[in-house]
Length: 144
Image (cartoon, rainbow, N blue to C red):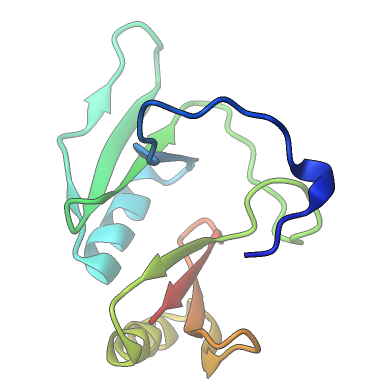
């Protein structure tokens, strides 16, 4: 591992472990997004949450393989994000799907659905991956 000396700071040792609990994604198409995650990744979803204190807010928790949890959220007045990829923020979400056969299968289904952005390939850093788009155009790398 390469460490940039300018980033090294004296940090006290942690006495706990950390992991990502969930990732949250705003969408204007809550039910369409939920169906996408079920169809392409065999995700399970909870019952739709409808806020009693924040009118119009609704969400689903989408779970993949009992580990990856994505909260899909919507509310009135959401603006569509720019698709030009020339802004700060997350560039993509990468999901390891187990192997090249799984990457190929998902890419084939995504191609048939018109959402395949980049077909399967081996990248310069040695990953076998494809890139697809969710219903809102967010990029998802499918990695072996």
